[in-house]
Length: 570
Image 1 (tube, rainbow, N blue to C red):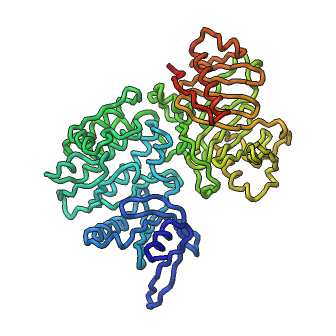
Image 2: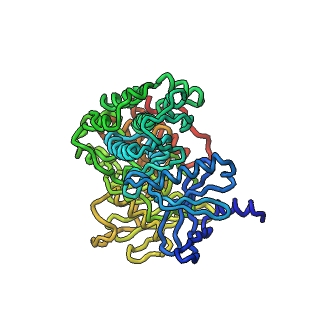
Image 3: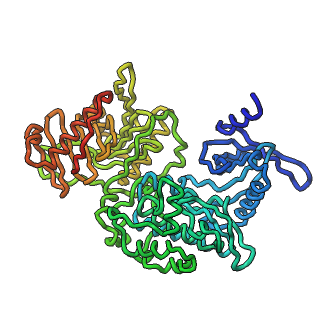
């Protein structure tokens, strides 16, 4: 193997041992060893990995820069500047700098590990955030910026991808690769740099130079992006994006209700003249941050996957935020695309610990005697990492994992069923275990179940002593689920097909007894024989029923031609 091939192999191969030579004061040299772990991300010439110190088992994020990329003096000077600036910074909302070292191949920058990824991944899962969350996050970013500017540092590349979240849900500003330190008051920088969607107009202009105000501009873009779900000037063409930035050409979409203070704050920031933008202290005094009864210092980890629950939001008296869109965000979980099944799981010690209950409540049945006895009451989609967790109406909690296995904690809370697919026809095989006695190989999945449980149902812990009345033979579990353009679909083992639509209507097909339970937009529930429902004059119901049956055909016969052609919500 050539040295280049070996280097590339090691760069992608977790488990590689990296050695740092440490010189002692007496002239002796010792060796400190690190085990390279999972890949965290990349940018420019650098790649970031999780490192474990071999002696202390401490986890660290390490930025690896190949020396081959530092051949030009400018690139080397840029790295030296990044290290010099970053290691001088010490603030709770800035990624901690530990130290750096080098070997014959690379330079290694060791940084604080932020286990909850970046706000870019958060927004990808959540689509957009509530104003309460944006208040909480922006105050932390402003705190970091005040510290930077006080020390004459301009970040110059503030964006969601450079805002990290710690295990405590603290925002940490990171990546100082484009940062600059002013040597004297009033100094202006002239390098055109940054990320297209976040670049301030004075950077593009370049004539008068730029200073701290570019970070304030980026803060406005970040606020807009968090609230709306995409940057204000984003287009498919960079030149068009730059043209829109120069013209301050953006608008607030009609389909995303925003408070007047939030729009006013963003409008004050996104102005062409940097001298007319509010200062960081001005922003903290803006009415946007005084809405309601305050806001939390830190958000619960459950918000990594789902919006804060209605009960949580009510603590801060945010009726002003209860627009139809925000109410919808609080009632349904975002459903990301189903990922390719994976056999291995990421270290469960660092998954979000869901604690805040999110209420996906079923309306109380008007004629529950005729409706389904067991259905999906709540769910949380975390298929980007692990799978979909759900709570059934009988109190059982389960997870459909990305590797096609399933686990269901029985209602009494002392035993669980583990479902695998075996044989040529991939039939479900169910094995029951006690929480006190189960195979060691299931430990990670049981831990994941516990995390999902703490989010979906915080009434009891997994090891609570309850009467052992689990009926393992009849326990219902989710066989399959899928997301469509208009709904999330669940197929249960009790022959129930459930479709929860984006407008909060629901169709529950009980295929064994041939009935349909329909929940309308007002939350009213009625149960009908399927034949009667299909001939009903209620077009709202019949459209959704037909859509559900079409998707059911796709779920049962995945090789058949998709039948989803018309929206059931129109």
